[in-house]
Amino acid sequence: MQASNLDNRDKAWSGRFSEPMSELLKRYNASVGFDKRLAEFDIQGSLAHAKMLNKVGVLSNDDLAAIERGMAEILADIREGRFDWSVDLEDVHLNIEKRLTDKVGDAGKRLHTGRSRNDQVATDIRLYVRDAIDQIVPLIRAVQTSLVDLAEQNADTVMPGFTHLQVAQPVTFGHHLLAYFEMLERDAERFTDARRRVNRMPLGSAALAGTSYPIERAYTAELLGFEQVSRNSLDAVSDRDFAIEFTAAASLVMMHLSRLSEELILWMSPRFGFIDIADRFCTGSSIMPQKKNPDVAELARGKSGRVFGHLMGLLTLMKGQPLTYNKDNQEDKEPLFDTVDTLTITLSIYADMMRGITVKKEAMRAAALQGFATATDLADYLVKRGLPFRDAHETVARAVRFAEQKGCDLADLSLAELQAFHASIEQDVFAVLTLEGSLNSRNHIGGTAPAQVRAAVVEARRLLGL
Ligand code: ARG
Image 1 (cartoon, rainbow, N blue to C red):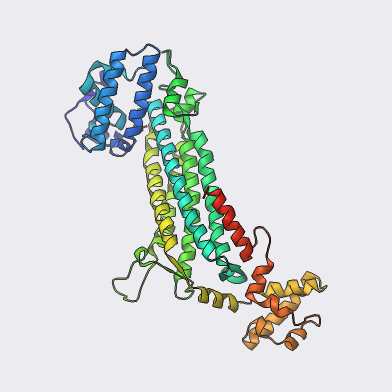
Image 2: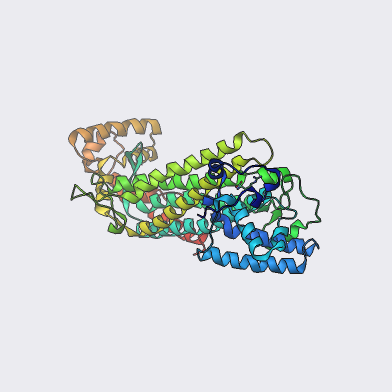
């Protein structure tokens, strides 16, 4: 970053001041260190604004041409890393405007007609968030695609389903994976919905009250791809709801990925031994040679915390602000940028990692056989023979206790032993006590039966447009 010798006379707002800004304040006040990331959007916004000013007769053809030429050079300089950002020029907006004026003279100074940095920055962030959504939704789709592929391969892989982290009932691994598909489906929906509220244009609100120039906001909006223009200038320059909504949607994705991470960590631990994660996504220990650690999952679980933090940060940033723009708002950018970065890399790595999972079907099956996972099936069997469910529940509980003492599963008891608990039990009971019998019986939309998982995979692919 260049520390030039600009004093207040070179600043965009120098006229009123009689002494240069304190060096400490310069550093405290400047946002260019991070908001330079908005540069391309800032230039897009400026070009659209200039075209509009020209259309309504406020900016001459020559001035517009000079601005377009200057901005093209600036954009190339930025893209190629040749642009020297100056802390003395505060932020991305003033850096670019000053460089433009250096290049094209007075035309550059006319660009800011009918505009303020307040509506300018609000526009830039909206363009940035819109672009972020357009990149994030396909990444969510990529993770969903990996989940669907893995679910299809495991449509009839049996595993224990858990409640309270205790074995509850047998489920298929495919069904379990598709639960995460559903979570991510809602996430994609949320971003798509939020995009409509992001895609409204503040430009034209100027500092806060609008402008006296004969602007044509609809034209600028069309040039920038905004669906609507803001209806109230005071709201438009100060509103950051869209950034909060975006971060809330991002937090939910991270929460979902964190839950999945927790499961991957458990499943990969030798105690479970349900899965293995490809070596390229794991790390070793510098001291314990036997270790292979699921660091990606642990990092994702950990990184969810910083995104939730950004959500709280943005809410807190806004809660005390009177209308309209306050400099507090400059603090909206770093949390937003970090949210985008964290979410983007986490989704990208998950899309890839979920493809590199090896499923240890035998270990899953063995675990499903251990915790009396088919006890509910035995109760349902008795209900079908006329017992009220509560009585059936009690009867099976006694059978479970007996099997537990004997050290075996319900399916290992003899017919005579089972009949001691209820006379209506017959040979066909063994069909429902098997894992496959239990799975196949839950054959309705949303159920865990392999046939339903296969149908859900087809539906999921349809939703993904595959
Ligand atoms: N860097 C500022 C921000 O990010 C730009 C807007 C400054 N506006 C002002 N009135 N000082 O919010």
